[in-house]
Length: 179
Image (cartoon, rainbow, N blue to C red; front, side):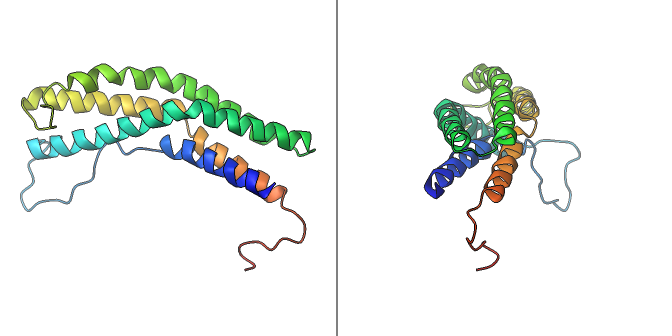
């Protein structure tokens, strides 16, 4: 039973980490004479690289998520068959799955922007600063839409799993704090 829940936690955490909050903008240390509201080519390239990383992580997460949800559901079903109360866990999984369905089209809408990479060359270097600014703003907005569509359901699922595990600890098992 412990092995099942370890795998369950691994699957949930993997899925949740993929959809955890991605910083869309960066914090930069202030130079001695910072340009006011001006994005340099170097800053644009850094933002572009970070946004591409977030896009790729999301893609990997969306590719793997159906199998992870099916495994998670199977484990919930097994726990339910063993007489465990899985209502909170099931509702958290259902909310997470619904959020994924809402977020996926928003993610897929970024594909054209990423592939065209207007203002950037194939190596991520700025070729047209105006187009590059527009591209990073659009991608940033799309990433925010995905985050908003998820609505914290990944975190809620992790918390529900944590509460379930805490409520269904075998009697006499020392907790991590007791060790």
